[in-house]
Image 1 (cartoon, rainbow, N blue to C red):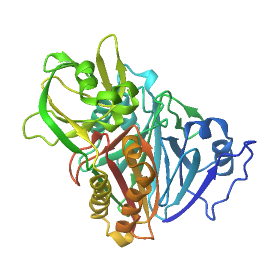
Image 2 (image 1 turned 45 degrees about the vertical axis):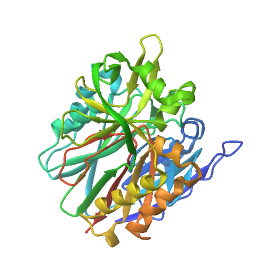
Image 3 (image 1 turned 180 degrees about the vertical axis):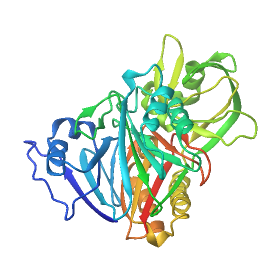
Image 4 (image 1 turned 180 degrees about the horizontal axis):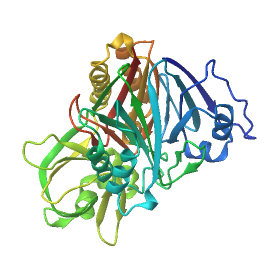
Length: 379
């Protein structure tokens, strides 16, 4: 397995010289700001130079290149496998009644024999992430898992783009890359590091990913009372105060982040479902714990592989973490590199949602506010 990485920054005249990989890649990952994807000719140039490579990627809320975190850049990571086979499939959310059906169709298109893992990139605003993950999970063969993330758009929440195999950019696209064979080793870890505070409250009215009432009170009104002055900056300020949610007593909590608010209906829209009857708590950031969470996710992701053998790691971290960490954001990426070692190439992006199991062998879930890592090594 060979890997190589290049990064491009915006030029005033949008003229670029394509940097050539020193091998013929099987897979090219492209992560970039929405403007960089839409305005530059780079994706088209990459597709033209490497027509046989599987191409996938998306817009971001920040691009990860090694231990660097950039805005308004485009990072390309090429992978050449010696024995592993890969397969690409895509669906458009506009062609389905709901996100669950889109997930079912997406994974259903992948050949199932010898499937080892599925990596998914989805548009970040039109899908219900929980339903999408549930659909994906329902079609995975036993013993096979999925990881991935939802595309970002800075902290704007206006439009996200996904890169298709054809080199086109689409706002409703969901892509999957299947990895096949016994020679590929894949690990994953997803951890947060946020602190919950206050009393636990009940979700008394909701529909899918829209929350209407908490403890029989209007959800937006109550949430604003928690935020104080920061309520004026919603929905962006909601990234700083996510919710911890348990669907039942004793269940492992997941984190949910606000995507939109509706003043008229006094509702909050989240990246994933908030079922009626579930229990929620407000959360706030602890910078040290966020960085420790990234380190712990790296340790978990490296367990199935052996830290020193990790050749590629795809890091998908939530935009909320980036807004909290600010100038310290690279510290969480550095913590991952320290665990995985200098031989591992790091790529990835800041997202509107992360997909992964909590731990090895668990089922894939939609997360918010986590550092989610997928590690690769070919024997």
